[in-house]
Image 1 (cartoon, rainbow, N blue to C red):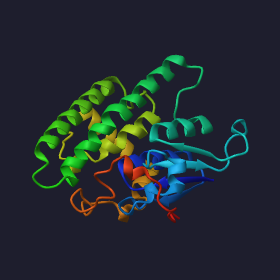
Image 2: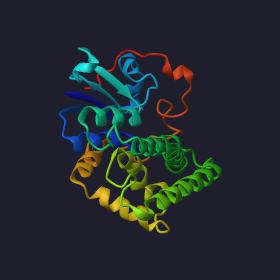
Image 3: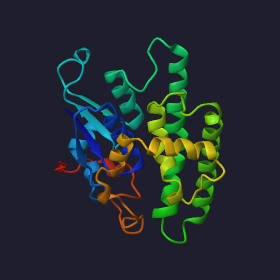
Length: 244
């Protein structure tokens, strides 16, 4: 059994998609981010960055020993699960394909994801009157990353040719382009890729997971100091929260 610490956000969807695709038994544990579950001492022991998603694998492969395995950061989690199941990643023996996979995983977690996350903040959660510069800045970066992905998809249906964890990482932030104030109109290959992935039953189940708990603008930087405007002081452990 795998515990998935989760909230219905693009980053949470990444791991939920993988778990649905590989059909492993897992238990989603809803993180009440607006209430500070991510700063509980119990969760910080799993994810010292105080961010979800994170997993606890209570039945790891024998090579890991008897203790449960904890993994935080979405890219690391997908690599772990791909290694555990032998699915959705190139063979360890295919060095060139593995190299390309690592390039695109790092592209997502270092470029597309952070730029889209900041765009989402300034589009949806920043105080009124403080959005314009940040929105324009990150909309441009988001658009640039769409261009990178459009070029990659010129001669293939998926980032690595076959559907893989690289697609699972990148899809969620392209899935919500419209709520970010962006458009895929100039990126027909990305739009087609998005449509193919969205149609997968496992992806649909992941996106629907705890859907009613999405933050649809009710928690913003001007009314929630737990979720926004964090500092190092935010990482001081709080009493353990019940996240079950």
